[in-house]
Image: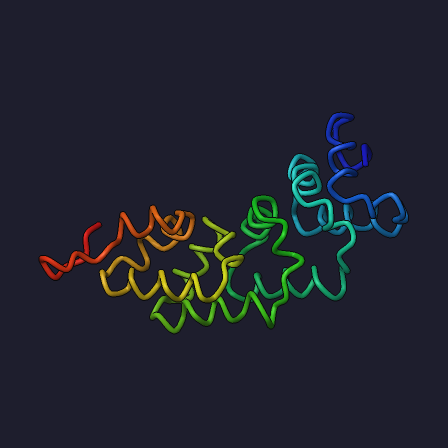
Length: 180
């Protein structure tokens, strides 16, 4: 793990959060994933950050999970630098199912009338958008859309707790308008 840039302080934390790594092959899991992530465009600092934040990534299949996700991100218009930034800030994404999580979320955004450049921009600036449940996403998108705030406020609104979201974007029945 130190060969992929983790400090001596980070290594025990990584192993504690993902003990299964102790049984993994250094060549097959650590070095091959580090090489692949470097080829995708992650810097050595980003690589260490990614492994420290999501050690289970070292057990993901390059062929089944990681490569298809990166290809898909490229296919929606992200360049190598953007893909590296998305992975660096939200490495869990590489473990998500394209068919069950990522594509349906993006389709929901399209269904709300967002353009592909808008969606790509949102995902680059706030990759965790892909990690929210469809129920939460749809509820918040419908409220923001009704207020004309979907493209400008969705990312920030998704990060709010339910109480803060309700307080900021609640419907005021006395005047028949949304308050924000």
